[in-house]
Length: 145
Image (cartoon, rainbow, N blue to C red; front, side):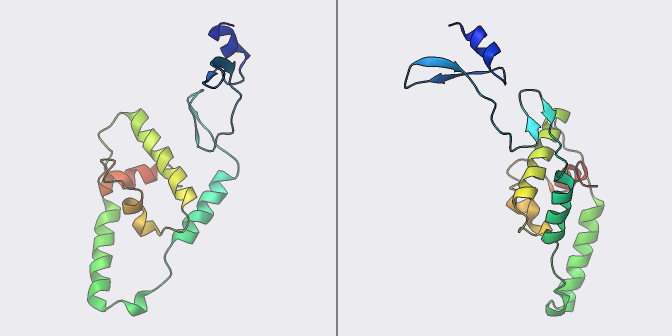
């Protein structure tokens, strides 16, 4: 059977090769756990995503632990936070790549609700992906309401 006809038989317009039988088969549509449909090239918005994201973000907020932090350190953290949150920079990447990274980040945050917001940058390995902190904050603005 020709691969074109196998692709047309598939729900997702793909064929898959099975090395055990040395044959091609129409591929079944698999459940998509990401927020991006690669076949149709569209974002997937599920009705519960926003509520789940909000709950995950609320769980990620740190408890008030200011009583255990010395005053000088507390003042330093406050100053750094004020500077950090006011600086946002659009990454020098094509828009398609920016949105791909934003969707990847959003999915990562939803899968790691236990990670504190202040640790997202390092735990997401944003610097290894070539993002500065201001660029990382820009990605956050793309999906946070």
